[in-house]
Every structure is written in structure tokens, then in C-alpha cells.
Length: 277
Image 1 (cartoon, rainbow, N blue to C red):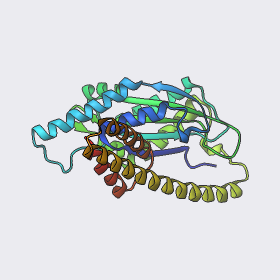
Image 2 (cartoon, rainbow, N blue to C red; image 1 turned 90 degrees about the vertical axis):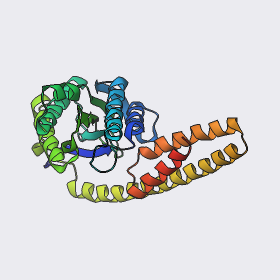
Image 3 (cartoon, rainbow, N blue to C red; image 1 turned 180 degrees about the horizontal axis):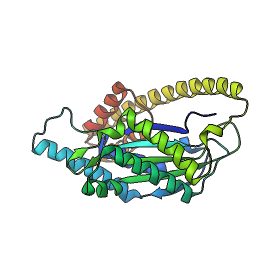
């Protein structure tokens, strides 16, 4: 028996760059994280939707500067991403997933208490992408949808989307929607060899987390090396080499942004990136 189907919430960092990087990541079958992904299907929105989310955030940030609005640091996250996952063995159709995501998005809209105008903009800033996974083997997750929702509607930021109550609500909405549209109850799910699976999951989690930390350190070191080469090329007025290193550095930056970073690591990456612009 499961308490809930799996939902993971995280902010989309790095402002408009981060939104567009997530768009590219979600659509890439060749990305290293998608070794077990068989098919990618757009459920709601498209690349233009991500662009709309980024533009809304940039406009809000610009108005912060123009009108000297108070409220701490400039807005750096323009969207929230929810990853809704089912265990292996369950494969809803794209149409069923669309109904599930519609119900979850509506539940979050009600939580934010949007007026008619805000609701209209909110709907235009929903991006959902389905990743259908290999169903056999022990590695990889089951089918899941990445749901990205823009945080800026009108003149306000939907801070509720990133709060614990939103995660709790979307889990409940996801449970109900899967039962309603797919006919599967999370309470009736029993994983095979539960105890063995729990021990294996703990070991896999620790192993994967260690590998991820190592990969992050490698990418940061790679960024620093590329920046040093870019700086040298700039000092030597070697425009061709400068452009080459800048392109390589931005690709490394995109790879780095797909990992969960600590505050210090985010600042390291941002400092390097800011120096080449």
C-alpha cells in the first residue's frame, strides 16, 4: 500500500535561462538522464509556453527595478516544476495523463485564489511533458509527467505554488485523478518483495546521490577550466577561441542546471556565467 503516488516539487532556477533549459531538457531523448525513456509526449503547451513563462518573469523583474518595488532580492525563479510519477507497470494513455494534469492544475489554481484575468494567464503558462519509461528491469523510474507552471500572473507572484501546502494538495489531486481517469487506486498498490525493495531503494538512493554530487563537482571544475580558456582568449584578442569557449561554457552551464545544486554551487555557476556576458 502506498500513502500517495510520487510527486516531487522544485523551483525552476536561473530565471528565464532556467525555464528554457528545462524546456530543452524535457524534450531531449539523448540526455544522459533519459537512458530509460522510450518516448516523450507533450501533454500541455509547447516551447512557446515556456517562452511565455520566461517573458512574464522578465517583465515582472523589470517592473521591480523601474518602480523600485520592495520585497527583497529580485525574482530569480519564474516557475515551479512538479514531477508526477507512477510505478512501473502502469501506463496511462497521453489522453488520460492530460485529464490527470488538468485536474491537478485546477486544484493548484483554486489554492492560489485566482481572479478571472489571472486564471486566463495561468492557463497559458502550463507546460506538461510525458516521459514514457522502459517498463522492464530494475533501473529507472516509471512513466511520469513534468508539470511546469509559471509563478508570475498579472502583478503578483504565486508563492503558494512552492509551499508545502501546494505539494500536499497536488498529491491528493494526483491520487484522486489517477483513480478517476485511470482506474487505479494508490492504496491497493503493493510493491513486489517490499522489504528487499526498500533496502535496495535506500542503497540506490545513496549511490545515485554520491554519483550526482561527483558529477556536479566535475561540471563546476569544467566550467572553471573553460572560463580560464575564455579569459586567456579574450586577453589575446582571439575572437574565434573566445566564441568557442563561450559556447562550450554555456553547454556545461545547461548540464549543471539540470542537477539539484546547493546555494553555494548556484552562486559559483552564476558568477562564472555573469563574467562572460
